[in-house]
Image (cartoon, rainbow, N blue to C red; front, side, top):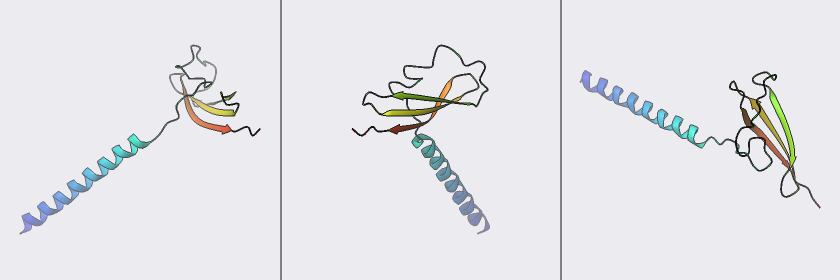
Length: 96
């Protein structure tokens, strides 16, 4: 009977690990990242010029008006390869 108990524990641990792995993959797949919109710095790809003087990890603010006349405020972070990662967007709707 001792081997049956050991097998049961092993199976339970294996199932628990499998469930955790599935949940981890699901979390990674459901995390949403902001996508550039018309007016974003990275809309259509990364900018051609590199930010060589700004420190890696620094924030780059960007403000523009979208096609509906709303103010859009975005924040980018400079990545180690000098690309920009869009990390935040706030849209202030204009009430006319």
